[in-house]
Image (cartoon, rainbow, N blue to C red; front, top):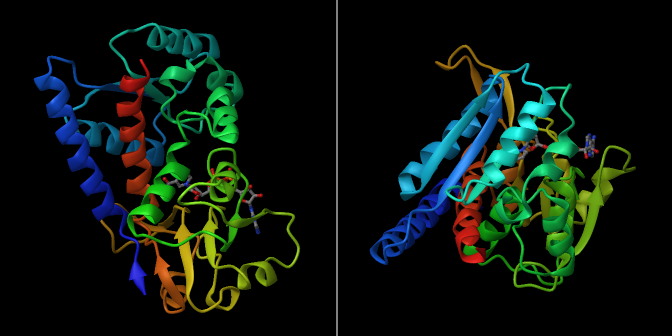
Length: 290
Ligand code: NAD
């Protein structure tokens, strides 16, 4: 079994990006600038946003964190987005999800200028992705492609099962794994909460990408020998032995599934850091697209 080490790979990518930033600056250009908007103080969201801001600092990007109160009105959030859309100093920005119930997530996604949509959630970017046109790919699926690519995993002609059909992970992932590209050319099955006989489907899979958000859902009896496993799930589970009071679990029962896998991502240290790396890569791309 080989560990698909997202932490190590993302650090390598960050070093490459840092060199490009030095190059840009030496040409008299400004450093890329990423902004992140967070509404409220949800613990997990704060952790993710802080990790993104820290990553920006590490590669030499400028970063701005916009913290809005949990009761911010939808109109005020949309006007903040408008401000970021029109701020020439900001190259790309993200709005950390989930948002509180009184805010319509779709309205927010549509309000972001597609040219600054480095999370790749805007319909224009998703549509361009479907057509294979230049665009910002959604950060998590893009990070997974990058990880598979850097580990030289053969995907062409393989059977790939994606578990979970969210707009930000499962659905775009299924499209990307079927594209006629280096990492792609899979025969893809997209499964979800209404799928019947899931274990029969997963047992046939060469590659399984798991993104449903249920801790340790995928067990060894559901996979075949030699399978490649990508675990997107992150669930916080109470753990008194940790200083934070919790540990993170993926959607895969790691030890037993790892024993049957050829490659597998850990949680933490797998897909999470790769999501941040692709956000950085998208922000760099935003400069080129200007
Ligand atoms: P979501 O919560 O929006 O959707 C879950 C999906 O799982 C749904 O499409 C549902 O149909 C499917 N599902 C639920 N039960 C199922 C079952 N029994 N069998 C098959 N499918 C089932 O999903 P999301 O936003 O993609 O998040 C999934 C997980 O990935 C969460 O744990 C989230 O925290 C994590 N996540 C991690 C990263 C990262 O960077 N590592 C990024 C995004 C999301």
